[in-house]
Length: 609
Image (cartoon, rainbow, N blue to C red; front, top):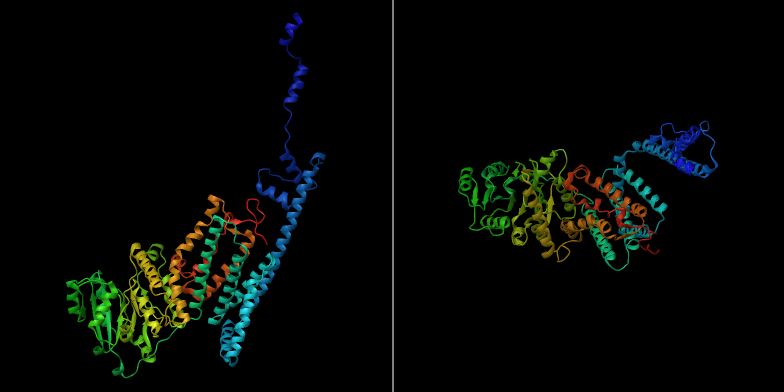
């Protein structure tokens, strides 16, 4: 009994304590250290060393210890992965070296090409007798349409589509170096080919046919892409061959020169803005007995009346402000008798040679009813002032007046822009004066003139300069007025409908009007990825890699074609020009993997082949 009571309180012997201590301080297994020793990693805390010794460098046999049998499979797996990765890296590096050698050889060949001579020869071929035969032209057109349709509708594997991208890209990189309009047409053809192939693939292979919201959202995205593809195509037609009209000289006998009325409409602008314009108009080089200057004051201000009397110019006002600027101009038309009317906004200062450089085309073309010149601004607008891009980055005006109007002029579709223009009085009165049905009376007036068969002209020489919008609100308000006016014309006087317009005039007007509807497609593009993030709806039934193979050539070719067409006037035209005409260069569908239905995904049924 005493032995049992002492046993729980007895201390262990010294030998027992030593054994227990040895058991407690036994080091724990360190698999990370073993793997570092096996692979030869010196610094276990360096991620870069782990990557090198795991996947690139072979293990050092000198530092390798004997591998326990239980770790043989792990070591074999790591070695296999490292070997495969090393082989893949070496193949990629070898491919890069081959491409680099090929690219260097290509660059050594390209500078030896005389691109100016190539451009002249290409345009010279169009003037040969072979291209003057109608039957040959029709044969070439039919063959081109057949080949185009064959390329667009033929399905490719991923490798074939990749090869297609490389071929188009290589041809485009060579052609873009050649100056002239014909190389631009070749680039446009390549871009339309890539875009149509992408569109055909989207229409036939990527639209889910399941009922419900998925189908509705997919069709909405597809319609938005069709809209932007249409705007891109119409823009190509509109700017395919800029005319670049030159000035014509006037008759030497000044008695043959016509009489001109200069209208300077104003409403609420201060007198200090109007004064330089009136003084500049008085300096226009034209016979004094054949020119009259009028201030059209819709503000009915006495100080403007006194200034007109002091300056020796006419002053016209009216009892109301009906139809705003259009009504003001029409009222002045009834009180004046000049054969031609030159219109300047109250802040646009004409040069002294304005009439002498513009009136020549009216002598050459008796049906010419209007000649427009660019709107040039000697002050920065809100964006140029805040971003510091004035005179360094071309603005949207440089794109419109430097390219689009020249393209319109080729198709006899030059727009009247409300200022810096000359109009023949007879045709203007025949269409009822300046249009008052819409807020963009200038473009609507030009449309009416074209419907009656009159011609218009555009000279891309700045012959007047004015003030740009000074505030963000006025800048946005001006754009809103353009958009609202174009939408009104599209609704009440649709260029696709009615008589009098040629096919290409309809295209030019329609593209200008359809452009202002881009807000709806852009909203669809921005919200399409959200349909998956919030509702897990897949709106594109295709693999992401395949979608990229079709989208990339479409986007790259569109950018190359537009860069060649626009040159320095549009390729770096600032943030606002990204929202203009070249919507076509950025209208790809959302490439977020979340909005793409992955083929073989268990969450959604893949599209049937």
